[in-house]
Length: 409
Image 1: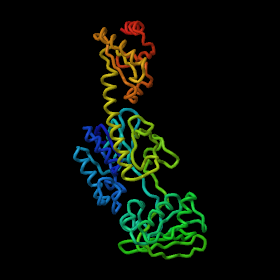
Image 2 (image 1 turned 180 degrees about the vertical axis):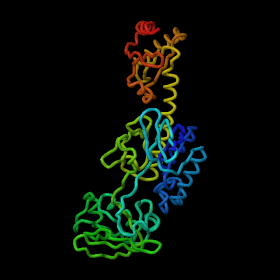
Image 3 (image 1 turned 90 degrees about the horizontal axis):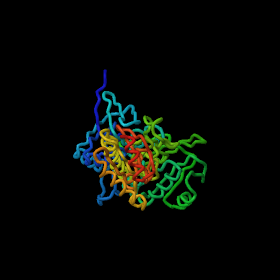
Image 4 (image 1 turned 120 degrees about the vertical axis):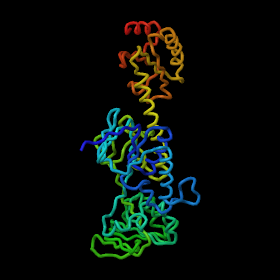
């Protein structure tokens, strides 16, 4: 069956906090925007029972409640939401494509906000207690729920031990299952010392999870001693897994630059190695993964995607126009010689307006637009004819410019 083709300004892959925020910004900028989410809108945040550290909600809010507000706001601005899986992408070039089961979607810009998934223990019954049924992955999000209760932490790296210490501010006891011998952890030394001296923390060494048990909610964890094989039954009110995350980046491999762990590398503007492709939220290589930081990433990605689309249209339809000879001047308002030369360009623009179109690009404010020409250096001239660059020059002498223009005419 031949697939349908649909066309958008921006396509966003992932409907978590970062993706929805980017959608809100793009939709509000009146870009034709589509967002794809293969499972639950809101992502991992929807599994958090209560979020108390998101600004603007002094009484706290459920993860689902907060993400429902994000979704409602995106829809308000006309964003199309498709709850389907993106199976393949081609991100190079001006026309980027995303393929689902029935449709090939075309977009001028793409924002990747596919997030990550916590690494699981793969112990028995684990899937029965994920997220709001007793197994959590975010102490900052869920600690308050376990006030005066007993919780278990799985793992001994920096995240596990530091989050375990944080949990002691709420829980009456934090039991840590460590796979290593007594006294050996993977966390930094300072965190280890603080944990070992914390009266609320208890360690069970040489163990890993054998199974999770309970009725509707988790109420015990069965640990297995990795040396003796003995099973240890531990009653708990909840369990936190801190054994790492895995980014959802499989379909982007070979196109997008990633670090050794599979997280997407971006600059501070959320730009990836491909023009017009941005990444936001937990899928990025970054230190802090919270709803608030995902929102920040999404806002930046949305703004930069809007700027990319606008600049693309300006560059293709106006700057690289075919009607007249074009003269493009890269300049900077903070460079004195550049400012002085601007008068020369403006004089030529007035004298030769019938045959010439002049474009002045401020490289200080519009570096990304200048970069489309391959250079962001001030005091650079580009001559165009029939929509193509035919000469690059750094000579801003008026007579030399006029001579070049006459040669092109």
